[in-house]
Image (cartoon, rainbow, N blue to C red):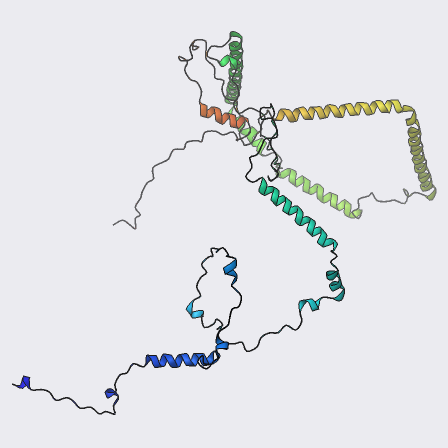
Length: 426
């Protein structure tokens, strides 16, 4: 029963904010804001005359008579809205317009004005005009020859055809030629006796060369053996004695040192007595008189005059020996030319020689030769000899491109031992 009983409406005071009716007044606010903006930007539009608001166009627009082709423009980036307040408003009139005090023409001096009005051109202006014409002609010529086919102005099938000169090509820079470290060829032609089917004479020549190399090796081995035998013959005591004498060369004995010290003391005492001087002491008896000094001076002067006269005489006689002098000069010139020729030959031969680049000396590789039993009539049956890699390495060494090298020594690597410290033991 209680649920169906209607509720009484709560009465509120009319003078409270809660009881106010909500009315939409946005259009009123917009109208007022628009009026304020008009007042700020030159007055209300409703109060202005038609002449102030509109203009009459008496001439036809330029677009009607001459249609201008539309150019594609790049899309300019839009100005951000945050910067719109900083931009000038076109509706607001400027407070003050800047007025130019004088025109540009008024700034010119009277004599310059007269020159301009007379129409007489200066030398600079005439030169500029000529240059403009030349540039224009060049441009037109270039445009004409742009799509045209280039015609050869020389015989293509000639033995030595001339290369076409490109007027727009950059000039070639002459670079210095790098001289090779050696004049020897990269791949040397082997001896004809090394062929699989050689000629008898060529084969014998190569065999003799190989024999000479082996003989040299045998001689060196014999020398070493002989030296070892001589060392073995020498008694070890005598060896020790000679070693001691060689090592003690220049070291003085104690007796010799004592004798030298005593002699030195005696010499110093004697010098002390004579007041230590380089020259011997001057005695009263040995002092020269004035007449003696004058005689010596006169003698020196006579000797000097004699030598001068002799020199003058030889100079005067040189006129009569012009032929012999010419022969001497010719001989000297010939000797100089001979020396220059020798130097030139030596310098030319250096290109074929192997220089010492490192600590090791270059050794010629062993001659690759087949014995008479190993020679085969067919190239298919022939066994290959030598190594291509070693051959190239030796070629680099011979041509001064790389220093001579030898195989690195192989050292035994011991296994690392692991030991536990006493302090770490449990």
